[in-house]
Image (tube, rainbow, N blue to C red; front, top):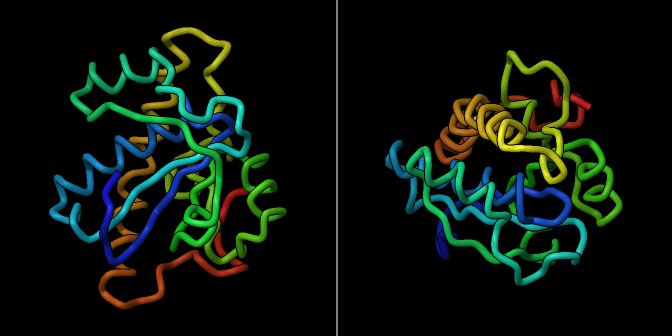
Length: 173
């Protein structure tokens, strides 16, 4: 996780061992490739404390390695630093509801798939009880959202209000 940055983007799933750490690592790599790595802090957390301190699921790590993404992760639960991020990206609608209940304003919450104009459905399904193909599908869904996430970051860094961040955005629910 980057320690400094003009913006803070955090990804949230249930236990912070499958979907959100994969999203974090993939997004970090794409920010670096886009020359934005030093300007954006990226983190992830879970809505539950079930796995706090644990490494990412080995299947998550395997997928990340297979595609040349960084690895190395310790699970965390949503805390003040995550709730205060400029953008809190929920991996499914249950996480978005949990974040709302934790007081994260709607204008700083988005579902990951809302950044993919071709997404079918709002949720990135939990691969935990699935097989390798389910983890590959998660990677594909995350990668499909990256261009929209990068656009959001660029717009914010340029000082413009990113499209779709308001209450009436096209946010998939």
